[in-house]
Length: 495
Image (tube, rainbow, N blue to C red):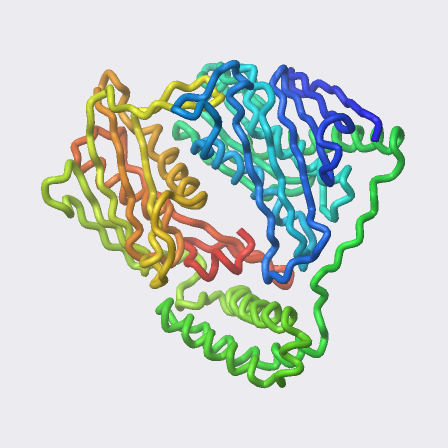
């Protein structure tokens, strides 16, 4: 493949997309530049289809210390486990990519973002989505692109929106909004803000959607140059999980039974009823049929549960636990829950329960960060733990998984704007949220629990903060927004 480069300017900043020189044995590869910051994105798709009932996509973001002219700390002097920021960036890349692959695609896909240069001016995280989209497209992977991700800041003085602000511009911004998606749709959104209005947030989202469309248009120009230099993209053959009409009809004949099984406010009782029904439906197939349709039967059973739950909401306005779309589950809060600790609070919403504990330390106990970003550390830390017992399961204990790091960051960002300054409160603050039981919205429960623990510890918050998880269901031309979603609605809903 001949080397192709496309340079362009958008919103006062210079970018470049490049392919054909590095990592040519990968299925697709693309180098993206923002200023001097440079990241290599590679995408590799396995030739063999895996016998999974899920899409096996993994995304890794690799911080190389040579990118900022530093030797890694520690005894080994080499990069080891990813930092929290690297994990959060990998999750940010994953979220817009995952729904853009066709349903039933079961080949393993590995996307790796390797930072080659970090100029300490232009962040490298959001541009990785554009490069991943380009790498997958030039590699001929079945993928609904192009996609892009932008960060929207807002100048604290002029209130003007900024696309992909520099680190200096971010320091003077009262908004930090990341948006990912296509030219027409948003599929990923995450934000931190200094209590800006709902109207301003909606305006920022609309502005971000326009910026995403502009970056997608530049990708199309890049693809045209690649085709001109190297011909059409390779057409790779992949086998998808296609629905089988007979299996679908036989499974969906039990729709009324599934609807009845779902109508139980207790999560564990409902799970048992649904599992029992699925096993009964599976038993109606002969051993030969189960072997022949080993993938199709589980897919249709899952589709039946999903369809029944969603139709129940859009047709009757009633959720599986009997709530209306806007109804919140029963709440219970307790402050000063544990003796001797600096601060604690227990928050319960339905069958989701979180115990948050606050510890205060000297300023020299702040967390030092060894990353490629020009950030030394932080004095407010939130850690979120999701042990297997909180869902009545067994599992591995130990270091936090990606999901725990991501959820901990959500609650940390929610509280950060109301944490007093170092001059007002010269302490390092650590909050640990232990999920005791979970049926959805545990990250937002940890936000509420954090407020309780901080107030119990005497931290002078500017005002209390709470959080709630929102969901969305689009079915039969109708759209229903759900307040305080539980686990099943999170898993089977559209948002």
